[in-house]
Length: 427
Ligand code: ATP
Ligand code: MG
Image 1 (cartoon, rainbow, N blue to C red):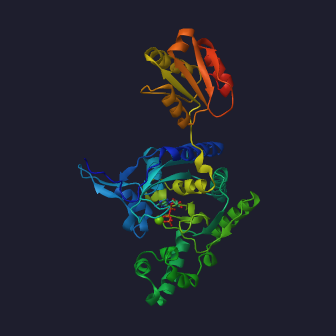
Image 2: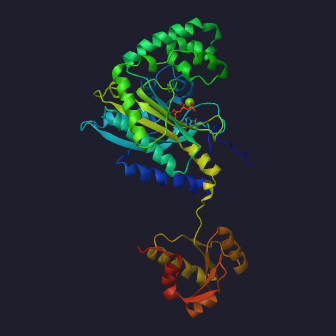
Image 3: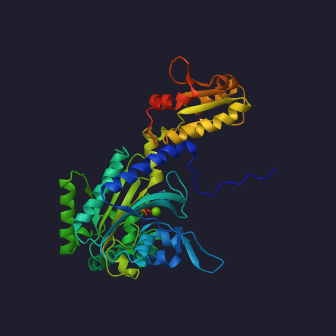
């Protein structure tokens, strides 16, 4: 016997029984984006490694240790995308989509990060992603946050909280960076190894540390909001006022910095206390310098990404994960002739009713065996075609979940009968 091949560490299968929850999430996502005039954008899963190095930044968890990178036979340095923004920005530039100045797009798909697997943290995971280009004012910040709020609400999630902060302009950040460097240098002995490394490369990232031992020192660090430049301050205040007037509750979190280098001004995060330590469900911010940094004409941008596995985990906790798709009708076929005629009938029914969910019994079997399968399939009705029914030009119809008398229906009328019983829509 061949040896069983195990899946890679940190990857997961979406089982058929879980597919309905994923489809439910994807359907709502499409509806909500359409409702705000955002168009879908599908970009590659592989990109040149330098794209992520240049955009995400060298002193980030992703670039330091999480990227799946390899050299292919043609000797290109390739990376499996760890996030969607960089690829979308690359695609927006290389397809000349910014000539008209403005763009609002979304995408959904797998991302790859080589991190330590835990509940809610995978090496291949999925994100829903929103991006907007060419809008300078805080109105887009408000819109894109409102969009994320509506999406989470439509998913039925309740125990969630919105954190917002402003990182200011790059110039304001440079001043703040010096203040932080001075502060943390004075506490160098108490810093963990990661933070000491970040102190040299990017001291802001120390604020993002998840090490509990670091929290006391972080709590004493100077705040960027205190020294924010006037324009960023006005931008942030307008955003807060817009969120308020739209009825979205938020919390200003002055130590929220986000793990990627490209953010400017607004950053935000949705968290939940229902998922233990992996509480971030959605995060994003403004990245006004990124398009220019990647070779495009200077264009402001803003976006967010939402972790789909964490959304599904929350849906499952609320019992919404059990929306399994079941056939409506199971076709029982007994006898050689019935098998031939049955396939024809099934195709005719599917022609007439595109939304009919019909499963045909395959591989024969007695009436008893086939009825057992029909029951297990979860179907509401069994449709029965045997030699006896064929000879009389009828089909038998048996309700499997309701107490109804079995009926016989002429083959010529069964399509209409099913259509009205199940409330189906015509082709
Ligand atoms: P964390 O602090 O949890 O590592 P992050 O800052 O690295 O998160 P982002 O890059 O902002 O995460 O990604 C946006 C969202 O994608 C996160 O809020 C989370 O819901 C989800 N996500 C990120 N990494 C993973 C992962 N390895 N497995 C599952 N979901 C993830
Ligand atoms: Mg991370």
